[in-house]
Image (cartoon, rainbow over all chains, first blue to last red):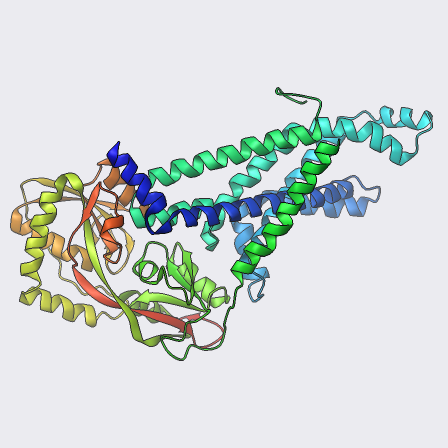
Length: 226
Length: 278
């Protein structure tokens, strides 16, 4: 027990190591929320382009989706940081947010697209025959069902985005994982730091999944939404 | 409905507050003019290798921002693309880098000195004491003077140490060696034989005490985790003694310093860092 407490002291208290973890937590939260929220907006736009009436728009959107989906996140980030924005004075953190946003948007567009496919075309048409405008039919008939259909995968995508942030340490961005590496390189004891960040990642993922469910489907409690 | 809206508003507000705070911290007071002196680092971003000598030497300095990378190649890339204003390397790594790249210069004089050490599992701390006793004699010997002479004449490309054959037949010591630490510790072309400056004293020690060294070619993480898990007795290769001994977890102990080398700030002298053609 004494040895364990000493390890806790070395990992968090000595030389204010906890500040590495707090700073890393802030960066992880920023990267995750910024790229996920921006990715949601961009994903909706990409989904709209994938379902556009003009074939040229659909084709371009399809190429963009395939390109970013097939490219490993680390490779994409390195290309953005060292090639596309190589000489730019833009902070690396902004470039990383852009890269993670593009990745999240691609997957989210796919999720929204699949969810829309589950809604029978006849439902919107039936709403129109009842006198609803095109927007009203979408807002009151298609959208609620799409949200229900997309929600489980949407929640999972949040966790995926959270997990993907853990690679940004390779670009010298100090996120939660990198903070743990830095501290363990001082104490030469990795386990306490690793367990700590594992718990933090779990808590963030779990809490936000519940929050998304609460916002998107407030009537439902516990259990699966779809 | 109102609660949902409030939650969304709170989330957006938190994001709006967090973005400038973090981005502000990233780009704070950065300078890009040439470094005139070793004390002229105020406001600069300096790239270092994580858990390397320069990382420990610069951590805590308030006048500059330490940016930690995994590999030397990553630091070079960051310097090439102006993600950092300078990098910090020890004299051996600097020679190695200068031998393969042009467009760089070391800012004189050195800003610090680092010693290099060997880690022992705490359970074999008696070995560490034996090794330290050996080191105190070794550092007075002609062999050590020759060692220092070879260190100072290292050309950046070729390890100039002797081929020390292992003669021990007694107690087996499991030694993890960081293979990516040229010229301090690396694997010979066969991929199995470890070599380098950091291993010379260890090999001489084992021969003198009739210990049999069982080397495992490893990497930094495996070396440390393996030592902690009891897979290895000793870890060697690019382990700086600047790490505060009081900060180390109780499962390991470090030896006295094997040797010391100076640490330098390195900056670009031209826009592009170019590899030197062989």
